[in-house]
Image (cartoon, rainbow, N blue to C red; front, side):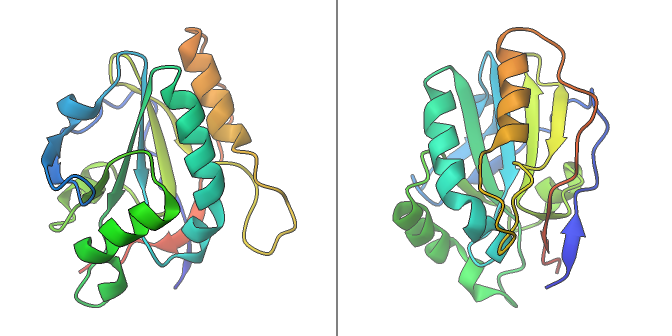
Length: 184
């Protein structure tokens, strides 16, 4: 697994539309089904990446907190499950329940959604405003596995707080770092 940074999709990009199967509910869900009138967070995750495993607890806490404020969260896994079967849809369902994800966990079998978002790593975070325009992309915070730096979700929280009060999101945004998406 190669340590890979985000590609940093340009700010102002319109959220690419999608319809994908949700491994939690068993339903096909589209972006229009999931988006919020305030802010929508699209996250590229997977089951086995140590960087995702490291942030899971903070991510669940943050999502639960901000869902109460009208923010929508959507997780997508785009990994090649032929070579990484631990990221298959059945394992995604079990993982989401075990970790307590309070959001849909969608499966991008074709990897077209990951390509449309220019996703490069897991975890990778994108925040879209009420108009579904990108206002933040990058990291949750500056903690990494075995770094000794506590998880706070500071970077993502700061972006969401700004969007929720119609304040511009800061221009200094750091790429996320994690495992590369496992392309077919």
